Image (cartoon, rainbow, N blue to C red; front, side, top):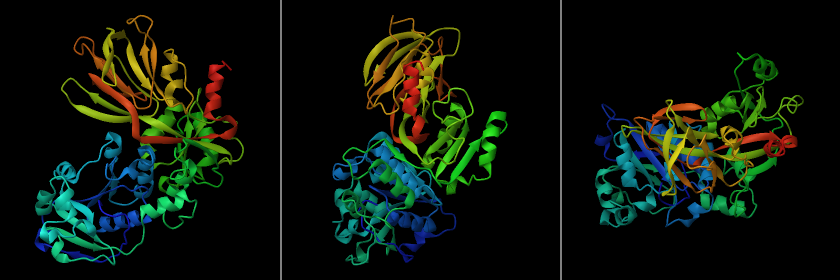
Length: 484
């Protein structure tokens, strides 16, 4: 919805151009619900649920940076992405598209029309204020949108009408549905109340509000990335491979208290770091904190058995929101795919031949020819894994940096690793993919043979890990650094 933020929702619906809405033989109908959602409130969730009752699918698209709305940059996108998932993620037939955040852009409606029209019949959700003056060709859509006049004539619009708004049905576009709104809500009011420390009870769902309070969103100029809190009396969803004897031993006392993921306040993972990485890969979009219990060896991402032997869930914990990697791979035929990783991603030689790689950082070729077994990028959280075994120093979890590391480097002589700033983009390209092929991996999962890996810290993906306050992740890394 590209209009005002204050809306009301009801069950009233009026249809226009009914012939175009005949169900028989119609393609899948997709409602495109875009907006700042900064933050998304209960009123936004009510609109999405109402749209889901009338359309086959609702795509919620939080916008990236907008020059006409500087407030979209008031909170970093990774937090806005989490809030969008928290508010809309559990709604039937509703999908949250985070591509604007990831690409740091604002996708215009005509581009959304092109993107989705091959998947079905596209309906743009707009506020009634955007169509005012439409009969005279003077609506905001016709005057200010890119390709607005063309869209007005050929696109479908679901028009949200607010009570008290001076509405003239003659201003409707040729293909339109009108939806009356009766539930109050405005993101502007939520932001203002949060900034003043006032209650927003009833305006935000409980999980979104807890997340905002945990990291000080809309209150502090720079949100936090860790917070002290509690899991006492919180409900958990248990993930454990009970085929492993030690995991079965530790998880059996917890199994009877586990709830479904949709009802949980956090995810409890019993196993090793590999089990935690699998759980994050499967469930990070649920935006539930992950609390791990170590049944393995190193367990950098988990809590020790001794710490969790008493009362569970623990009362005194530290929440850490940790960034993930956004990765793009390209193979020899030019096919591209994307992925997210929590720990690391790397290229390694796929034959007995050493890999010849070109390393580009922020579009500057830094290493024209890296002769090695491969190269790896790692988040601060992942720096204790393969990056450390390759010789890099592990980083504290909240270090605003990540790593580029070479594996068994022959050339350039003496180069081993580089520390990267959060906004860095790295490209690693195979110089001889036919004779010296390389295989890609993300958190240990093979992506197959590729020619190019592009990597950066994600602007949308993050995972919350929870540690007992008495032995936080920072203490684990300190123990490594001082050989304890």
